[in-house]
Amino acid sequence: MTASRPTADWATLAELERDPHPTLARLRASGPVVWVPVLNGWVVTTRAENLAAMRDDVGLTVDDPRFTTGRITGPSMLSTDGPEHERHRAPFARPFRLDAIRERFTDAAAEEVARLIDAFAADGEAELRTQLAGPLAARMMILALGLDIAAEDDILGWYARIVEAVQQLSAGADEPQDGRDAYAAFADAVRVALDSAEDGSSLLAAALGDASMLTRDELTSNAAVLLFGGIETTEGMIANLLHHLLTTESLAEVAADPALLDGAIEESLRMEPAAAVLDRYATADLELAGVAIPRGDLVILSMASANRDEAVFADPDRFDPRRENARLHTTFATGPHVCLGMHLARIETRAAVLGIARALPGLRADPERPSAPRGLVFRKPPAIWAHW
Ligand code: HEM
Image 1 (cartoon, rainbow, N blue to C red):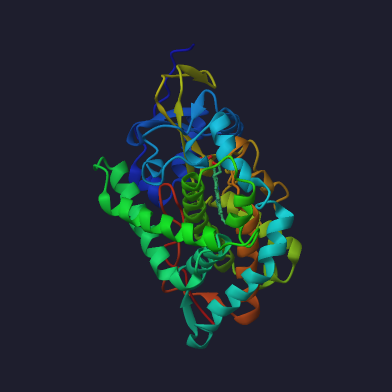
Image 2: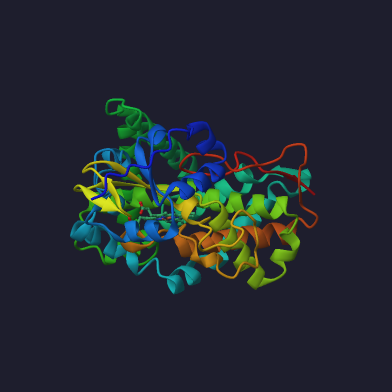
């Protein structure tokens, strides 16, 4: 092993949170694997090394107590590796396939978008993250899991309390009881949904049919991971695309051409992955791209950096919906933990763009209140003000 330890002691949390891309470009220039003291971890910078790291679930694992979500929800596909991961994930593979998702959700997403837009169309202005992207992502997941839509406020309340508990744990707090209570309430709602589900009536019910290898508790943990994995990220995916289309004034043009819309969705996923980093832990002393990583160290896979790797993407900081290789982005991950929800997320995003372009011709960003994605892990604009 080499003794090289490229270190970016100049990188700051403020920059990584606000606009990480200049910092990430500098990290890539330093090497494919760089120690970043403010993150207390190694950042993997190039697309090739990130792909290799995502495929390696032996040298690198998600199964570590520092992954705090698992401490609230119990083990799930997101917090296990190897055969145990396969056991948690397998029942969901069939219901989440592209054809099954298209058939089940294309119309439902369009209807939900129309309903949400109806509620603000007469106002002449809207904040599209909280009035469109967020509620669409939440409702579609509640629907997908077969939960009671009438309990939407409760479900989102539990969700917020669980996220808060996970953050407190990450900041070193003891087991936060409030998060446990919220998770218990969520688990009850899942139990009710499962008891009343008919075969295949929701993605969860469909998984139940294939889930003889999972206990009800384990199924519930995976339902929680699906709910949380599907709300924050999809809200960010939709918000980031709306931000890109509004700031480049290309919404109408893109919405009018299905191929261009596909291109814009992939290009926005490349430019701003809503989940910008994935955490892994070294299971043994190992070497990544010639850099020695001690056992137990945090290894941060940077989708945001991989997606702007100049060796793969020409002029990587430019949003170009016609970019031919935009689909080579790593935003939905690869390997054993590749995103289960990507087809559903794309359907929702497409429905959101088509819905607003049709219902609100002339929609423009409000120049007085500009939007910009931000966030260290989950990136999206806090607000997207637009008028028509
Ligand atoms: C309907 C929406 C979504 C659902 C239901 C969903 C669900 C999931 C689930 C269950 C996993 C864990 C798979 C496993 O560990 O085996 C996962 C992984 C992942 N998802 Fe999604 N997801 C959704 C949307 C998104 C979006 C919009 C993004 C990014 C823009 C995203 C990015 C990822 C990534 C990067 C992983 C890999 C995590 C890791 O390896 O640590 N997902 N998703």
